[in-house]
Length: 217
Image 1 (cartoon, one colour):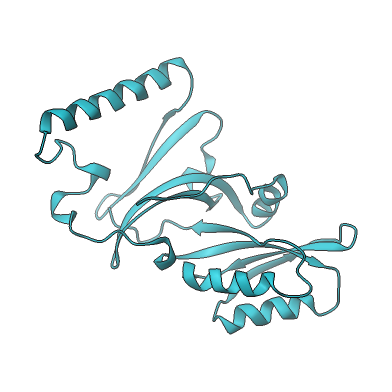
Image 2: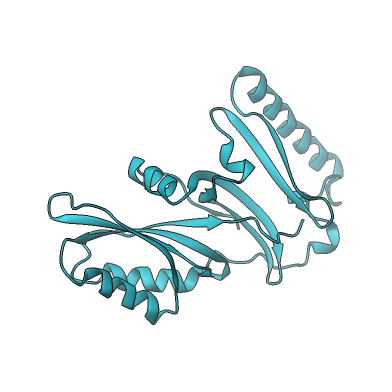
């Protein structure tokens, strides 16, 4: 099953904070092989501005592929409009016909682009993935709140790469944290604990970060 997450919790402030940290937010579909199995997920993602993928804008869509020898390549084109939409619909119809013709046999084109010898590899659950994370934490403007939040992250062995603490808005202030690599399960536990702190006055917004380093095809 593919993990999916939409953009409904992303705010204009998140776009600005991400930019301040050197990133842009993109809604990505990610499929990759790891030592644990195959990751297949769709969610908002922080991508560093120096990455080509971060500079895809407007109605453009892009696919980035990483090969063992060729490295990373990017394929870019229009993703909206009459011609682009018609092309996508025709491609879907072709895929359906290929499956129908194949019948009980394997599809002519491997699903998700993986070779058939990889078919037995497990799909990695979202809790098992590892990533850097962007956290936006709404807190009361009180002395010591940053120490409480940092203490929770330290408790779960999550190290901090960068912090932005903005000016108070009424009686609240957002704390923006960029973490180093950690597991989804661990960050979920930390977020749950942080949200139960007396000084935290709302839900923590979490966005995964992708560096696209050392990816397998």
